[in-house]
Image (cartoon, rainbow, N blue to C red; front, side, top):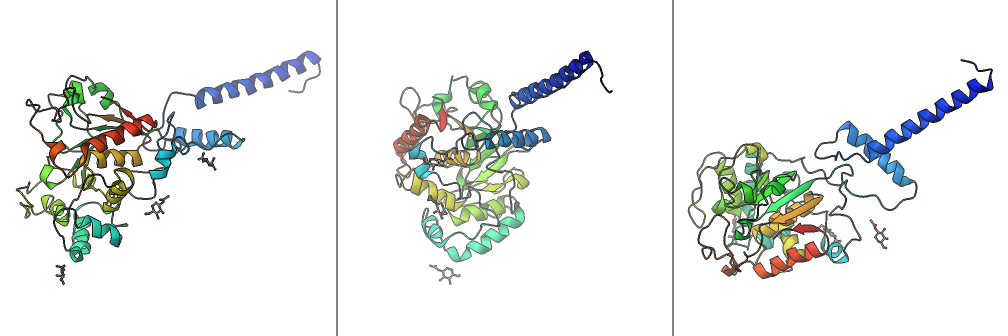
Length: 345
Ligand SMILES: *[C@@H]1O[C@H](CO)[C@@H](O)[C@H](O)[C@H]1NC(C)=O
Ligand SMILES: *[C@@H]1O[C@H](CO)[C@@H](O)[C@H](O)[C@H]1NC(C)=O
Ligand SMILES: *[C@@H]1O[C@H](CO)[C@@H](O)[C@H](O)[C@H]1NC(C)=O
């Protein structure tokens, strides 16, 4: 409508101003909405991320690597962390990176007994016919995502902790070895998304859970194939499960290169090699944006046992001599001090 009177012109100007401020308000509300983007990118997240990056392009600080308040992989928060952290080493072994570097093979093959590495390519190619050769579920560096992870150790200090709900509220819940939830939900939670194990510590899993195999020797890779197919392999250095109940499509293999990286950079050769608990924790540190740690270390009596054991003198983890439990615990405390993980005790 063409305006003649000055009153009409003022009205039109007001209408334009109103529209602009309404749009601005919407943008503001939308940018600051509490909805966090997790897992897959929704359109909302993608658009918001684009807007956010344009916003930052206006000369603000460096781009945040994730959408949490604090992101683990954020640089310049802790120089101690930055010196050790290397995001280029893939946590998982896939058909694409199955050519394990020679110096890693050399170290890894000697961890438990002597293993003849010339059989490795054959063992891996057989394994990747039974389990998925590639895993796409860990897109790192997703600025729109805030992926939270709870790493739950098996320490007796969980007993009576009432951490169950808090643990279950994370996107991923990582457990290991003989971890149980039934009957302990109030203290340890009920959800599991990833269960770390090796043949001698293997347990059956509910559908939908990722079995993460930590291979300590060649036979462990062979066992994974066998336990999901023929059931031929029943013995390693002890009797093991010949079959395992788990989703074949969700099986993941811990990368020996990543294993060595943790031994070199994080536990710095304390102990013969890092424990399952430390390996699972660093897995989380490399695939999650925010990590909470539960159930590590001794209980309040200084005893190292599992939360499901009645006898608190039952477990001899600390005395195995293979791992250095004191150094590993100090490492977790340091990670917490440096603001990289939240450590619940
Ligand atoms: C970290 O600090 C260094 C030196 O001050 C700087 O050059 C670099 O851009 C910073 N990186 C990030 C991601 O903030
Ligand atoms: C990170 O690891 C890769 C692969 O092993 C290596 O080439 C690179 O030099 C490492 N980066 C740092 C900063 O250590
Ligand atoms: C490993 O196995 C290959 C193939 O069977 C054999 O030629 C080689 O001598 C073996 N090496 C060792 C150190 O046993």
